[in-house]
Image (tube, rainbow, N blue to C red; front, side, top):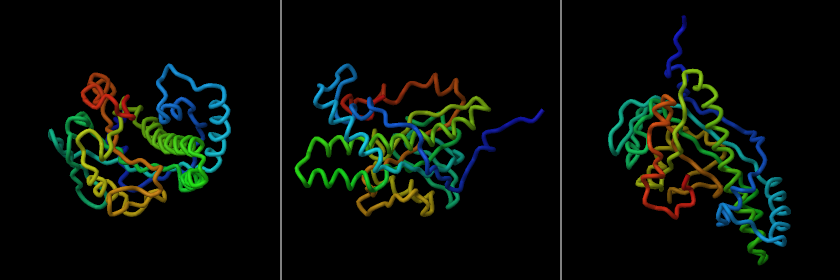
Length: 239
């Protein structure tokens, strides 16, 4: 009988996802616009939403790059992984949030530059609400590309009963934004068209990056959600 081990799922070289088939999640767009889960916009806003969600979806081009790295060492405020460019040590509250991880997905995902350009055009012409809707769709499309990464890897590691943790990104929950430099280093320039600036920001703006741990499903389930431990209750990314 052949035993499948976590090591067989390591992917040090970047993999690309350039097609995201899932339609725009209207609920996520509303969340980015600040609507509570139990509230819906009025009929006039609903009409605007339908129009500009469709326009923004046409202009978006969600894609992502990811690697799956072995975890070498974990501590309360650090996590060391092996990458194709050498050992990388992420610092911050990462040991607390990803302490169960045996493998680590590192990802960069984007909605592409055109949806951002559309929002800028609308804002410049004084159409602030349509611009806000388009920006919200851009955020949702980047998130959809991130989800596509997690689904693809999860479909592979579920054969050994592994599951993903919640994503954890530089700039959130005790991880400095400057850790973005290390995150981009593991891709060696293959980042689905996303550029990294000196200010540790990403271009296109509607892009996300982060880390997702992989561990036995029962361990992930038993581990309390990091959002439950976080004191920032107003966080837009709270789950």
